[in-house]
Length: 538
Image (cartoon, rainbow, N blue to C red; front, side, top):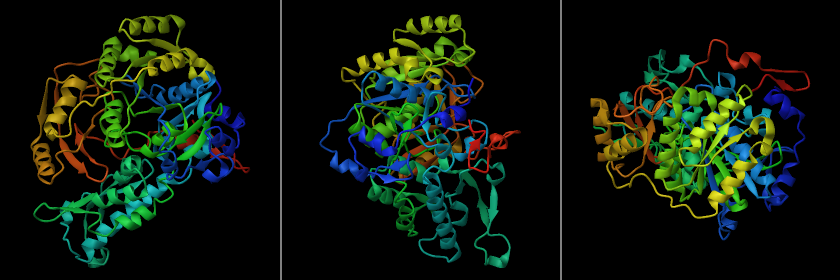
């Protein structure tokens, strides 16, 4: 089997101007970053307002294994297959983080003959969007600490600062630190602090949901950075950070245009964490895709219980999006671990939102025809179309039958609906997700969680959607509970408001926001020769 990077480096991508022309754009519409990458100004949306939206296709997955089930590869391959059928299609996916790329999981640009190009640049820095998010986030952190040091009003209690720092790298030693040590106060106020990975930054979530640069600035101003001695929330706007932080993101707000290995246009933009944020590409990119193509194929993080629910209840709600169908990725190894009951619950959950559901059985090289046929039969017994696909080895041609099914599913308007109303209380929203999506019998709140949820409602954030932070390895909060557990008790341990992003993060158990490196990090295999050719990426 050829490696992803070997396949990518052997490809001959089209000039990005030609990719743009296929979307009806000219060179004047682009902000070029070399021959094969460009940004599309977010302001293009204003000139396309009168165009009807194309079809929106979500790719999600059954409960995954630790190796991943190939959602991105399926997303890219499906868009290529639609293109081969003569449809005008575009991909809309997240940007890779350097953390997984240098850690365990590898890059996030698809795989084999269904990936986005140029693979090395997309996985390594790309157009600098993630670094801009890091800079904006850490500027706010520096301003907060200076606010404390200078004893400025409004007063922030040193033990109630909730704005940590970020870096786009897996580094467990930075999870918990002490700042302001030594110097007898000259180095700032001594307090506990820590780092999260950049993808976990609320600034990243804001970038993902902002309508434009002005909206992004307003949202940053609403970020809660800490509390005073009586529990009043102090925002980024009150410490004067919104303008400068937004200025650092003035280029990052523009979606990145690249192409798949078969030349299908792709928007790769934004990368919020799929646990403490909504785990989708940016709303601006998705909206542009809907105006520029007949089919926009996008994905959500983790399994459908986390990714798809947040895509529907947060991103679609904020952006006024109406998805036309959902594709559920199933693999042999995930099916062997979780069984057909797991697939059934994911199908049932997706249908709760009123969208047609199709199953893509993603073939891996060591899968036998007999194993896949057995899975296909079991999935079809659920009453939804199920198709074996091989987008990694076959490119778009590896799943033309699925693409045809998608076109048929999108031919009639979906009866899309949300899971809950915003005027419900936070606990009612939590319990709706827990019982109707996860299969829980009850929800238990820690004393800390109860107090935090009450404080969040008292501060005026009752009508925000909830963003559940839970293990992706199970429907429950126990990663070892495989399959489709029912009637369990979901334990809510904490809650915090992401007022700028516009949701309340509800944690079930300990949620890791700064991953560590494995015993043998992927970075050890990555190298570059004297000519600048990168090797070892996957």
